[in-house]
Amino acid sequence: MDQLIQQISENAKAATSALNSLSTESKDELIIKAAKKINQSRKEILTANQLDVEDAITNEKDDAFIDRLLLTDERIDGIIETLNDIAKLPDPVGKVLETWKQPNGLEISRVRTPLGTIGIIFESRPNVSADASALCIKSGNAVVLRSGSDSLRSSQALVECFTSALNDMNLPIGIVQIIPSKDRAMVTHMLKGLNNAIDVIVPRGGKSLVQAVQDSATIPVFGHLEGICHTYIDKNADINTSISVVTNAKMRRPGICGALETLLIHKNSSEQLNNILDSLIEAGCEIRGCEKTVNLDDRASLANDIDWDTEYLSPILSVKIVDNIDEAIEHIQKHGTGHTDVIISEDKNSQDYFINQLDSAILMINASSQFADGGEFGMGGEIGIATGKFHARGPVSLEQLTSFKYVVRGSGQTRS
Image 1 (tube, rainbow, N blue to C red):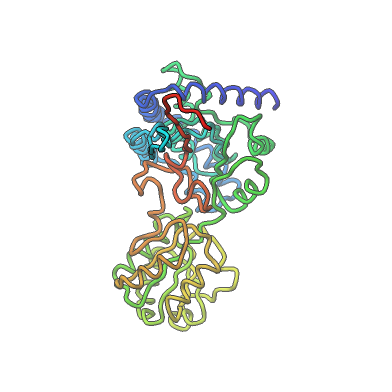
Image 2: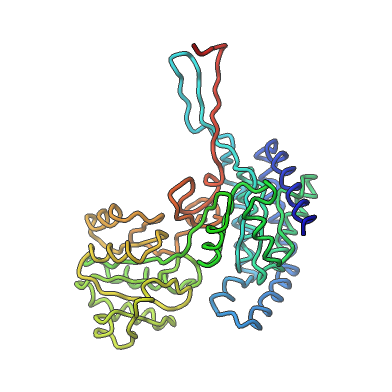
């Protein structure tokens, strides 16, 4: 293991030096070439993924887990499209954020610069390996990937396409690396910086993974513990909007972090409840409600205290009827995780009040929480959603993978 750590560390350090001199055109060419390699390697990628899925089924993983793990031709098309979109985005590196001149003649500029090497620890979504690699390349960072054991074959097959593209362009393979071992000790080494090779860690997975990373890391971490996303239906909500947005937010893909987990509905809009539940239950959703909800619709089972604090990541939804918008906000502040929260309302005063009173990383009005995604924000993709308040918040994409430096231009000035 020591030899593997040393090799990955040396590769990453060599890669960051090469990336510093890589032009935007070369970075874009590398990403596009990797996308083409993925297209050409569909058979190998799908075969590797089939083996991962078969093992997951044998290990009795649930349907939401299998959905996150599964690759199809359509999903590979999505990966390719994401990579090509990232290649088209403006290069953040070297962008001058601000320039000003001091009375002594010094001209000072704040300029975007890469972070260095990003360590990404993720669980069952193999597409993360491709999306993250492209985002790191475009932002001038090397990347070290640590896939969960369940998706290792699939992730390695995708990373091999980047390795092949790097070889074609005579670039260091350390620009994109994946740890080939399932040994959990490798995670510990990553959290300690992998011999000073890794500058920041991004965990992508469930609460237990992210909590473990945040508790143990000795280097900076971008991450969120859970995505307990709420949607509040105000007293002035349009019923058609309520039905379509809530059903999509919960059932489009229940296993992603932007999926709706708790529905709050104003008592004056509770007549919408049966129609909303009709749509959800028809789509296969289980409903767990407060006493008022169960009294209005006996298809709901009674929720317990744990339900309000649970990220189901499956077709289960908690529902609570509230007296007013303040009760909804209070519930979100108590049980939310600062990921994504939504208001459905036609009243601008209610919309503004909701937005101003809450401090989640993402707040939405009359839209599905499943839009909580860097690609949907026009960022080309994301490594994850950060709910912290320092450096990165919300979708972690190109700009969030950079820092800045100050460039000072003078003409011989000295300080007295």
